[in-house]
Image 1 (cartoon, rainbow, N blue to C red):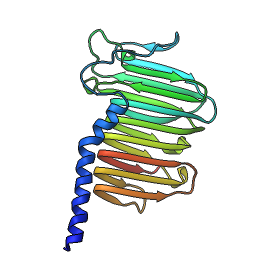
Image 2 (cartoon, rainbow, N blue to C red; image 1 turned 135 degrees about the vertical axis):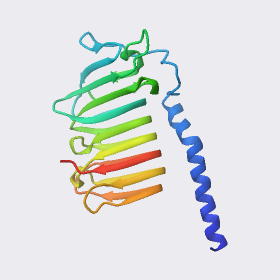
Image 3 (cartoon, one colour; image 1 turned 180 degrees about the vertical axis):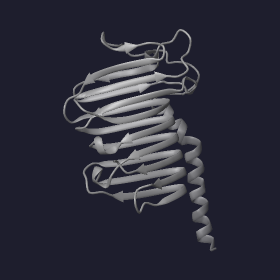
Length: 233
């Protein structure tokens, strides 16, 4: 091994170490989500028809064509699915609710207009929460940030440019090649598995780019965890 190669490897390990130390905190701080044991100091207001209890929250808001969605979740099992109408539908189920708290107390931000939707859930890991977001098909952009947990995305039913950022957890992408024009996956420490026919598997520091036959882009960034791509039936 030449001295030049050794220097390049050393640089790569320094970059990896920097990511592992700073990336989780940077994402959490940027979204004002410390993911500690304290509930948020403020929470969003609900509409009259929204459902809210200690372990369940359900709401829907109308979105216009070509809308964009920003989703921030602290700790949960998240599923992003396609909606059959123009409604953004949100469901939260909490397995271990805290005393004197309702599910809506963890909804830090709910800012929805016909063209944009911003949701921020300060869900604690101890709650063992499950979040389902039903997204209208004809949106232009979806960005989802998850600090800890798992995230599943029905790529074939959600169009536009889709970006997924996960600090610590697993991403499951349900996608055929006609659901995107480009698909790029980066993991700092983890694994990448394409379970589709002819797909590849890689581990540790992974950077993979795939071309598709559809429209829109998919970008997945994981600091520590795994990315699994499965065919959409």
